[in-house]
Length: 193
Length: 147
Image (cartoon, rainbow over all chains, first blue to last red; front, side, top):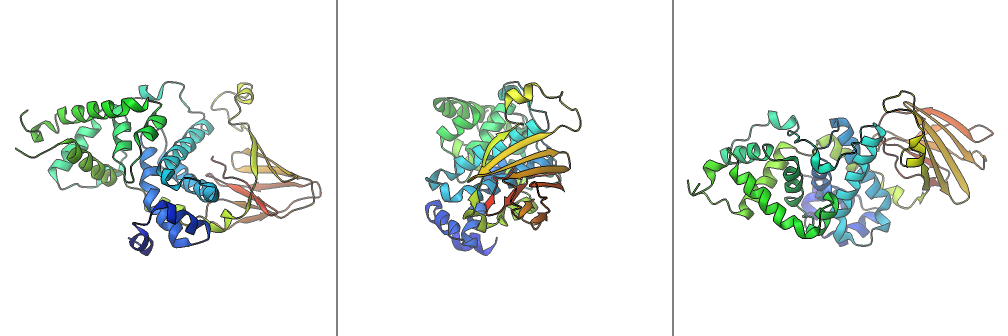
């Protein structure tokens, strides 16, 4: 990874934001590096072409860049980025006149993007986890994508993104993990089943 | 097979798998990193109207999928008003007062800003690529327009 991530990888958002606002490019690059997976993963599973998804991703960081000096609680940046990225996607879908009026939880399961197919994952357990994940409902996939992020989103933030009561995130996560363990791909790895 | 697959281990594994199967594309990350930090100080124009996001307006618009649909946006910066109409690959705009401020179109950090000619009435016209764009008008910059 680049110098920015090596040098500033552990620096807190509270310290990075003012440095980036002051024009410190390394601090900005570290911010992007730390938040890029949050942005990318929170817009997985939508009915978007890969170029549109990249546009929504880039637009999220352009917007972070233009709003940087107004960020009051840098610790909440992961949640801000996830919300902004999903708003960008909704705007794009609307621009494409493809915005569905159905409840987002009713959307059909979406297979992993093609990029995954070409990458060979050596470890058989990981392969099983990937296959098991692909067999889950779209709702479980979406929730599990958001609760396995680093830096993490709070349950409150995940709840807002998914329009679910905060209190139901933990139990739903539990049910989805149980479903994952119960998939035919993962069952052989689970002791006592 | 006695491998432990408790919640924490399973969540860790899943996080790794998701990063590996759906990684952030390198070119998208590069674009994000190269965002212009100078913009942080610039005066940010305010979006006051976007036909795409105004339901009342959308309701009387043409059917989904109809070609040539116009998206109209209005921004204000101080006492300046910036109006643009986006149609596919073309942008038509007008600034008022029409004191011929410098107008540039920005389309992603890798591409340099493109200056456009403004006529005596504050009107301008330019071809635009797909993807997000913003305008710099005088000392002000509009927010990014997602498209």
